Length: 77
Length: 156
Image 1 (cartoon, rainbow over the protein chains, first blue to last red):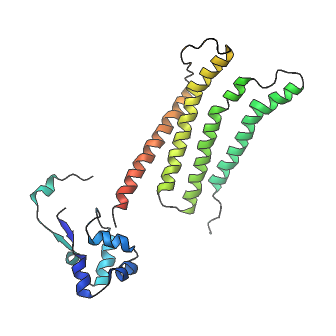
Image 2: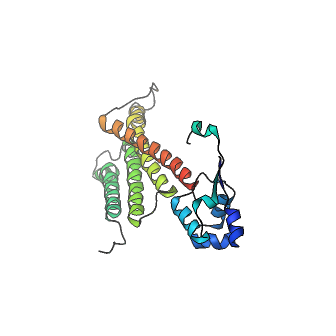
Image 3: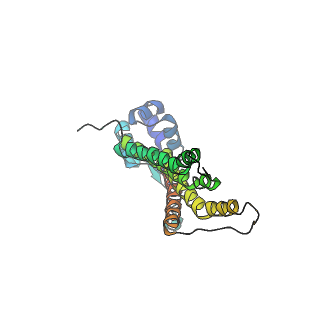
């Protein structure tokens, strides 16, 4: 998937620990770890907005898109 | 208005299950036993066989009461709810199968003293076929729900 989660970069910039952020936004450390490593299918807007609030950033600061022409042919499963 | 601790549909369903259970056992077993003590033939072996389908249907109703209770508690649609739907569907399907195939075949065999072991006896009626299909729909819905749940779980 060409959408990458760059949460690690923001965490380092804000000098925050993943455990603290997970606690603040109300998800488990494991879930945040899966999110950081891109092992999830998606992120709820709810979670995204909480992350943006805690990290004082915009969605584009924690998500990155790599252009791929094949995206239009990818099926949702 | 505060929410009551006990779900009314769940409690009503459980009462119905108990009443139906008692009624079925009384009609098929207890009454013939009493008649036997009064000189009648008593409980015929086929009476035990005819308990099969109602028992599965009662199990399905009991599973339905569990689902009602979970809905009343406000449980999210999760594995327990899926299992409840699957149990209701399974109970209905097994009950219908017992009523359509198992009971007529066993009654036929018992009736001829297991001398004539030919074929399977079928007793199709609209009610049992409908129950079987509704059960199948519930089982498939439960399966679909489980897949949907696992997809939702992949979202953080």
